Image (cartoon, rainbow, N blue to C red):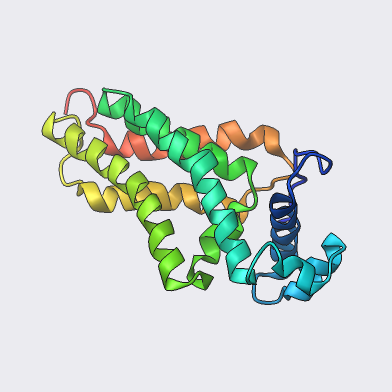
Length: 205
C-alpha cells in the first residue's frame, strides 16, 4: 500500500509555480507511482495544459530532478553541514542519524525520491548520488574515527556500517505511518539506539 501524501505546509498563494507543480506531482507519484503518472494528469491537477506545464519543466523526469535537487539544497545538505561541525565522532554520528531518521518520519515525499532515483537521467542521477555520497562519507568517517579511538566493538567495517546505518534510516519512509507524526521522534531514537548500541564498545569489554 502506498503512503498517503502529506499536505504541504506552504501556502498555495505564495508558492511559486514550479514548486506548486512539484507539490502536485509528489502527491500523484505517491498515489499512483511515478511511471503510472502521466504529465497530462499533473497538468490537469494544476489547471494547466501540457504545453503550459512544459513552460516550467521540460519533462516528467525534470520535475523529479527538481524535487530531488530542492530536497538536497534545503534539507539534506544543511543537515550534513550541521553534523560536520560536531568535533566528537560519536556526537557527530548520532546527530546526523537522528536528524536523518526524523526527516523520514516527517516527509513522505522521500519515498518517491529514494525509490525512483533510477528514473533520473544519467547526468541528474550522477549529481544526486554525489550529494548523497557526502552523507555516506560523513557516517563512514565518524565510524572510522571511533574505530581508531578504540570506541567501537571489534570487527566493524566503517563503509559497510555506514551503509547499514543510512539504509536502516532510509527505509523508514516505506513503512512509517505519516498520519501519526507524533511518533516520529521515538522512531528516530529507536533507530539510532539500535545502531549505536551495536557499534560502540561496551563498558568493561
